[in-house]
Image (cartoon, rainbow, N blue to C red; front, side, top):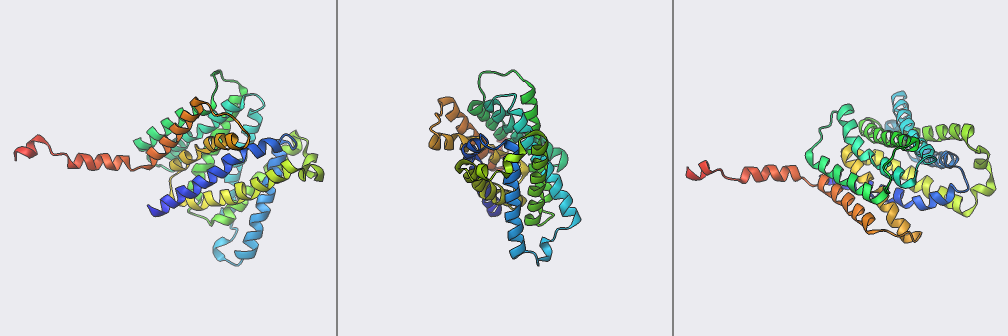
Length: 312
Protein backbone atom coordinates (compact mmCIF):
# COMPACT_ATOMS: atom_id res chain seq x y z
CA UNK A 1 0.00 0.00 0.00
CA UNK A 2 2.82 2.39 0.88
CA UNK A 3 4.59 1.75 -2.45
CA UNK A 4 1.32 2.15 -4.36
CA UNK A 5 0.58 5.45 -2.60
CA UNK A 6 4.08 6.74 -3.36
CA UNK A 7 3.73 5.63 -6.99
CA UNK A 8 0.42 7.48 -7.35
CA UNK A 9 1.90 10.58 -5.72
CA UNK A 10 4.89 10.63 -8.10
CA UNK A 11 2.64 10.04 -11.12
CA UNK A 12 0.42 12.88 -9.93
CA UNK A 13 3.48 15.13 -9.95
CA UNK A 14 4.29 13.94 -13.48
CA UNK A 15 0.78 14.83 -14.68
CA UNK A 16 1.04 18.23 -13.01
CA UNK A 17 4.24 18.90 -14.97
CA UNK A 18 2.58 17.82 -18.23
CA UNK A 19 -0.46 19.96 -17.57
CA UNK A 20 1.69 22.95 -16.69
CA UNK A 21 3.58 22.74 -20.01
CA UNK A 22 0.53 23.40 -22.22
CA UNK A 23 0.96 27.16 -22.10
CA UNK A 24 4.70 27.14 -22.90
CA UNK A 25 4.26 24.57 -25.68
CA UNK A 26 1.51 26.62 -27.33
CA UNK A 27 3.84 29.61 -27.37
CA UNK A 28 6.74 27.55 -28.76
CA UNK A 29 4.91 25.84 -31.64
CA UNK A 30 3.82 29.23 -32.91
CA UNK A 31 7.48 29.54 -33.98
CA UNK A 32 8.69 25.95 -34.39
CA UNK A 33 6.41 23.34 -36.09
CA UNK A 34 4.95 20.77 -33.65
CA UNK A 35 6.79 17.63 -34.77
CA UNK A 36 10.02 19.56 -35.28
CA UNK A 37 9.60 20.76 -31.71
CA UNK A 38 8.98 17.17 -30.55
CA UNK A 39 12.02 15.93 -32.48
CA UNK A 40 14.30 18.41 -30.71
CA UNK A 41 12.53 17.92 -27.38
CA UNK A 42 12.87 14.14 -27.36
CA UNK A 43 16.42 14.24 -28.76
CA UNK A 44 17.55 16.48 -25.89
CA UNK A 45 15.68 14.28 -23.40
CA UNK A 46 17.32 11.12 -24.77
CA UNK A 47 20.79 12.74 -24.73
CA UNK A 48 20.28 13.81 -21.10
CA UNK A 49 19.31 10.28 -20.02
CA UNK A 50 22.16 8.72 -22.01
CA UNK A 51 24.52 11.04 -20.09
CA UNK A 52 23.02 9.90 -16.79
CA UNK A 53 23.34 6.25 -17.83
CA UNK A 54 26.97 6.74 -18.95
CA UNK A 55 28.00 8.48 -15.75
CA UNK A 56 26.27 6.25 -13.22
CA UNK A 57 24.97 3.01 -14.73
CA UNK A 58 27.09 1.88 -17.69
CA UNK A 59 28.95 -0.65 -15.53
CA UNK A 60 25.75 -1.91 -13.92
CA UNK A 61 24.89 -5.34 -15.35
CA UNK A 62 21.20 -4.76 -14.63
CA UNK A 63 21.10 -1.62 -16.82
CA UNK A 64 22.39 -3.15 -20.06
CA UNK A 65 20.77 -2.60 -23.45
CA UNK A 66 19.72 -6.14 -24.32
CA UNK A 67 17.91 -6.99 -27.56
CA UNK A 68 14.57 -7.75 -25.80
CA UNK A 69 14.81 -4.44 -23.92
CA UNK A 70 15.51 -2.49 -27.12
CA UNK A 71 12.55 -4.19 -28.80
CA UNK A 72 10.22 -3.37 -25.90
CA UNK A 73 11.44 0.24 -25.70
CA UNK A 74 11.04 0.77 -29.45
CA UNK A 75 7.52 -0.70 -29.30
CA UNK A 76 6.60 1.69 -26.48
CA UNK A 77 8.15 4.58 -28.41
CA UNK A 78 6.09 3.73 -31.49
CA UNK A 79 2.82 4.12 -29.56
CA UNK A 80 4.03 7.23 -27.77
CA UNK A 81 4.98 8.84 -31.09
CA UNK A 82 1.62 7.78 -32.53
CA UNK A 83 -0.15 9.60 -29.72
CA UNK A 84 1.69 12.83 -30.39
CA UNK A 85 1.47 12.55 -34.19
CA UNK A 86 -2.27 11.75 -34.34
CA UNK A 87 -3.01 14.56 -31.92
CA UNK A 88 -0.92 17.08 -33.86
CA UNK A 89 -2.49 16.26 -37.24
CA UNK A 90 -5.96 15.96 -35.72
CA UNK A 91 -5.73 19.47 -34.30
CA UNK A 92 -5.57 20.74 -37.88
CA UNK A 93 -9.15 19.58 -38.45
CA UNK A 94 -10.88 19.90 -35.07
CA UNK A 95 -11.05 22.24 -32.11
CA UNK A 96 -8.63 22.05 -29.20
CA UNK A 97 -11.53 21.55 -26.76
CA UNK A 98 -12.83 18.50 -28.62
CA UNK A 99 -9.28 17.19 -28.99
CA UNK A 100 -8.79 17.53 -25.24
CA UNK A 101 -11.95 15.57 -24.52
CA UNK A 102 -11.25 12.79 -27.03
CA UNK A 103 -7.63 12.46 -25.88
CA UNK A 104 -8.95 12.14 -22.34
CA UNK A 105 -10.99 9.12 -23.42
CA UNK A 106 -7.77 7.17 -22.93
CA UNK A 107 -9.03 6.87 -19.35
CA UNK A 108 -11.77 4.58 -20.71
CA UNK A 109 -9.58 2.74 -23.18
CA UNK A 110 -6.88 1.81 -20.66
CA UNK A 111 -9.02 -0.54 -18.49
CA UNK A 112 -10.41 -2.18 -21.64
CA UNK A 113 -7.01 -2.71 -23.27
CA UNK A 114 -5.51 -3.81 -19.92
CA UNK A 115 -8.28 -6.41 -19.66
CA UNK A 116 -7.43 -7.86 -23.10
CA UNK A 117 -3.63 -7.52 -22.97
CA UNK A 118 -2.77 -7.99 -19.29
CA UNK A 119 -5.94 -9.88 -18.24
CA UNK A 120 -6.51 -7.27 -15.51
CA UNK A 121 -9.95 -7.42 -13.95
CA UNK A 122 -12.03 -4.24 -14.02
CA UNK A 123 -13.49 -3.50 -10.58
CA UNK A 124 -16.74 -1.57 -10.29
CA UNK A 125 -15.16 1.31 -8.31
CA UNK A 126 -12.76 1.83 -11.24
CA UNK A 127 -15.70 1.82 -13.67
CA UNK A 128 -17.51 4.43 -11.56
CA UNK A 129 -14.35 6.50 -11.29
CA UNK A 130 -13.80 6.28 -15.05
CA UNK A 131 -17.39 7.35 -15.70
CA UNK A 132 -17.03 10.36 -13.41
CA UNK A 133 -13.71 11.29 -15.06
CA UNK A 134 -15.25 11.11 -18.56
CA UNK A 135 -18.14 13.30 -17.42
CA UNK A 136 -15.64 15.74 -15.96
CA UNK A 137 -13.61 15.78 -19.16
CA UNK A 138 -16.79 16.56 -21.10
CA UNK A 139 -17.63 19.53 -18.88
CA UNK A 140 -14.04 20.74 -18.80
CA UNK A 141 -13.14 20.57 -22.48
CA UNK A 142 -16.06 19.98 -24.83
CA UNK A 143 -18.13 22.74 -26.38
CA UNK A 144 -21.63 22.61 -27.80
CA UNK A 145 -20.78 20.69 -30.99
CA UNK A 146 -20.95 16.89 -30.92
CA UNK A 147 -20.54 16.33 -34.67
CA UNK A 148 -17.56 14.15 -35.58
CA UNK A 149 -15.06 15.03 -38.32
CA UNK A 150 -11.73 13.72 -39.63
CA UNK A 151 -9.82 15.50 -36.87
CA UNK A 152 -11.91 13.83 -34.18
CA UNK A 153 -11.18 10.39 -35.64
CA UNK A 154 -7.46 11.14 -35.78
CA UNK A 155 -7.44 12.37 -32.18
CA UNK A 156 -9.27 9.21 -31.13
CA UNK A 157 -6.30 7.36 -32.66
CA UNK A 158 -4.14 9.51 -30.36
CA UNK A 159 -6.18 8.40 -27.32
CA UNK A 160 -5.82 4.75 -28.35
CA UNK A 161 -2.04 5.13 -28.78
CA UNK A 162 -1.64 6.77 -25.37
CA UNK A 163 -3.79 4.05 -23.78
CA UNK A 164 -1.63 1.33 -25.33
CA UNK A 165 1.53 3.11 -24.17
CA UNK A 166 0.24 3.11 -20.59
CA UNK A 167 -0.88 -0.53 -20.68
CA UNK A 168 2.30 -1.77 -22.36
CA UNK A 169 4.41 0.19 -19.87
CA UNK A 170 2.61 -1.83 -17.20
CA UNK A 171 3.62 -4.96 -19.08
CA UNK A 172 7.28 -4.16 -19.76
CA UNK A 173 8.26 -2.00 -16.76
CA UNK A 174 8.50 -4.96 -14.32
CA UNK A 175 10.63 -6.93 -16.79
CA UNK A 176 13.35 -4.43 -17.67
CA UNK A 177 15.53 -1.78 -16.05
CA UNK A 178 13.71 1.56 -16.19
CA UNK A 179 16.51 3.85 -17.40
CA UNK A 180 17.60 1.98 -20.56
CA UNK A 181 13.97 1.17 -21.38
CA UNK A 182 13.06 4.87 -21.26
CA UNK A 183 16.15 5.85 -23.27
CA UNK A 184 15.12 3.55 -26.11
CA UNK A 185 11.49 4.69 -25.93
CA UNK A 186 12.34 8.40 -26.02
CA UNK A 187 14.98 7.92 -28.73
CA UNK A 188 12.39 6.15 -30.87
CA UNK A 189 10.03 9.11 -30.55
CA UNK A 190 12.87 11.49 -31.47
CA UNK A 191 13.71 9.51 -34.63
CA UNK A 192 10.10 9.11 -35.76
CA UNK A 193 9.29 12.77 -35.03
CA UNK A 194 12.35 13.77 -37.08
CA UNK A 195 11.17 11.67 -40.02
CA UNK A 196 7.68 13.15 -39.80
CA UNK A 197 9.13 16.65 -39.64
CA UNK A 198 11.42 15.97 -42.62
CA UNK A 199 8.56 14.90 -44.89
CA UNK A 200 5.71 17.14 -43.71
CA UNK A 201 7.11 20.24 -41.98
CA UNK A 202 9.70 22.97 -42.37
CA UNK A 203 12.34 20.83 -40.66
CA UNK A 204 15.09 23.38 -41.38
CA UNK A 205 13.70 25.49 -38.53
CA UNK A 206 14.85 22.80 -36.08
CA UNK A 207 18.46 23.72 -37.01
CA UNK A 208 17.94 27.48 -36.98
CA UNK A 209 19.91 28.77 -33.97
CA UNK A 210 17.88 31.96 -33.97
CA UNK A 211 14.64 29.99 -33.65
CA UNK A 212 15.98 27.56 -31.04
CA UNK A 213 17.38 30.33 -28.85
CA UNK A 214 14.31 32.55 -29.01
CA UNK A 215 12.90 32.94 -25.47
CA UNK A 216 9.62 31.06 -26.05
CA UNK A 217 11.23 28.09 -27.80
CA UNK A 218 14.33 27.81 -25.59
CA UNK A 219 12.31 27.92 -22.36
CA UNK A 220 9.76 25.43 -23.69
CA UNK A 221 12.49 23.05 -24.85
CA UNK A 222 14.19 23.12 -21.45
CA UNK A 223 10.98 22.54 -19.49
CA UNK A 224 9.62 19.91 -21.87
CA UNK A 225 12.89 18.04 -22.46
CA UNK A 226 14.16 17.50 -18.93
CA UNK A 227 11.32 17.67 -16.37
CA UNK A 228 8.40 16.85 -18.71
CA UNK A 229 10.08 14.12 -20.79
CA UNK A 230 13.29 12.67 -19.31
CA UNK A 231 12.26 12.71 -15.67
CA UNK A 232 8.52 12.29 -16.28
CA UNK A 233 8.73 9.14 -18.42
CA UNK A 234 11.46 7.72 -16.21
CA UNK A 235 9.13 8.24 -13.24
CA UNK A 236 6.19 6.68 -15.08
CA UNK A 237 8.19 3.60 -16.06
CA UNK A 238 9.72 3.21 -12.59
CA UNK A 239 6.63 3.75 -10.46
CA UNK A 240 4.06 2.09 -12.71
CA UNK A 241 5.55 -1.18 -11.46
CA UNK A 242 3.69 -0.52 -8.21
CA UNK A 243 0.25 0.44 -9.52
CA UNK A 244 -2.24 -0.70 -12.16
CA UNK A 245 -2.67 0.80 -15.66
CA UNK A 246 -6.28 1.72 -14.82
CA UNK A 247 -5.17 3.82 -11.85
CA UNK A 248 -2.46 5.40 -13.98
CA UNK A 249 -5.07 6.35 -16.60
CA UNK A 250 -7.28 7.97 -13.96
CA UNK A 251 -4.33 9.97 -12.64
CA UNK A 252 -3.43 11.02 -16.19
CA UNK A 253 -7.03 12.24 -16.65
CA UNK A 254 -6.02 15.10 -14.36
CA UNK A 255 -3.74 16.55 -17.06
CA UNK A 256 -6.43 18.84 -18.57
CA UNK A 257 -7.35 19.91 -15.03
CA UNK A 258 -3.80 21.06 -14.34
CA UNK A 259 -3.64 22.60 -17.82
CA UNK A 260 -6.80 24.60 -17.10
CA UNK A 261 -5.53 25.70 -13.69
CA UNK A 262 -2.12 26.80 -14.98
CA UNK A 263 -3.82 28.55 -17.90
CA UNK A 264 -5.91 30.43 -15.36
CA UNK A 265 -2.90 31.32 -13.20
CA UNK A 266 -0.31 32.10 -15.88
CA UNK A 267 -2.27 33.07 -19.00
CA UNK A 268 -5.30 34.72 -17.37
CA UNK A 269 -7.67 32.20 -18.96
CA UNK A 270 -11.12 32.24 -17.37
CA UNK A 271 -12.54 29.06 -15.79
CA UNK A 272 -16.33 28.81 -16.10
CA UNK A 273 -18.58 27.18 -13.52
CA UNK A 274 -18.99 24.21 -15.87
CA UNK A 275 -15.23 23.78 -16.17
CA UNK A 276 -14.78 23.96 -12.40
CA UNK A 277 -17.48 21.29 -11.99
CA UNK A 278 -15.62 19.19 -14.56
CA UNK A 279 -12.40 19.47 -12.54
CA UNK A 280 -14.27 18.41 -9.39
CA UNK A 281 -15.75 15.39 -11.17
CA UNK A 282 -12.36 14.24 -12.43
CA UNK A 283 -10.82 14.59 -8.98
CA UNK A 284 -13.77 12.76 -7.44
CA UNK A 285 -13.58 9.94 -9.96
CA UNK A 286 -9.88 9.42 -9.31
CA UNK A 287 -10.33 9.45 -5.52
CA UNK A 288 -13.32 7.07 -5.64
CA UNK A 289 -11.42 4.60 -7.81
CA UNK A 290 -8.41 4.74 -5.50
CA UNK A 291 -10.36 4.13 -2.30
CA UNK A 292 -10.95 0.48 -1.28
CA UNK A 293 -14.71 0.91 -1.71
CA UNK A 294 -15.33 -2.69 -2.76
CA UNK A 295 -13.48 -3.97 0.32
CA UNK A 296 -15.54 -1.67 2.56
CA UNK A 297 -18.81 -2.98 1.14
CA UNK A 298 -17.61 -6.55 1.53
CA UNK A 299 -16.65 -5.93 5.15
CA UNK A 300 -20.01 -4.22 5.76
CA UNK A 301 -21.92 -7.23 4.44
CA UNK A 302 -19.96 -9.51 6.76
CA UNK A 303 -20.85 -7.41 9.80
CA UNK A 304 -24.58 -7.45 9.02
CA UNK A 305 -26.50 -10.05 11.04
CA UNK A 306 -29.37 -11.86 9.34
CA UNK A 307 -32.78 -12.30 11.14
CA UNK A 308 -32.12 -16.04 11.43
CA UNK A 309 -28.85 -15.32 13.24
CA UNK A 310 -30.66 -13.04 15.67
CA UNK A 311 -33.18 -15.77 16.55
CA UNK A 312 -30.45 -18.24 17.29
